[in-house]
Image 1 (tube, rainbow, N blue to C red):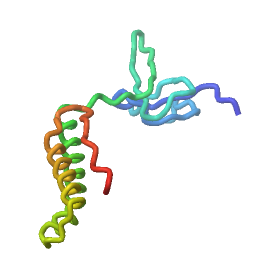
Image 2: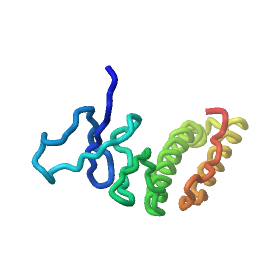
Image 3: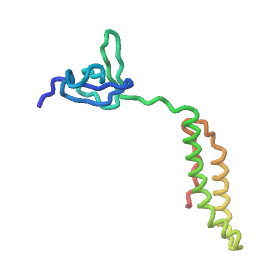
Image 4: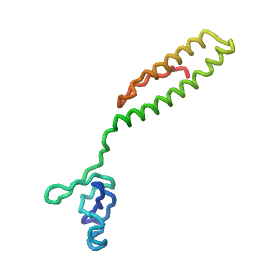
Length: 138
């Protein structure tokens, strides 16, 4: 079946619904804003009314995150990494507390301690912070 025309229902400058059936006369006037659109238009695309009432459609591009969103996201990532580091250090801490310490245990404990400290120093205000690499022997 060949589709002659696609229609997009526009709400808040976003495509909310698509149909290949002409909506003219199907809804009370003024209730919905239906506009003809290209076949490749997709739901959630941005819709902009230009000069002379001609609409244009483009894939929606979300706005960049705010500084608060960046900070919140990075705080969550940091907490998860610190939790993992803490859990990974526990066997070494137990060995130290039980006087079951060996030189390799001390070396590994120090690696994890350094990693944990490096995690706390990451700049959480950066959009893509550089996270330290955990010790390889997990």
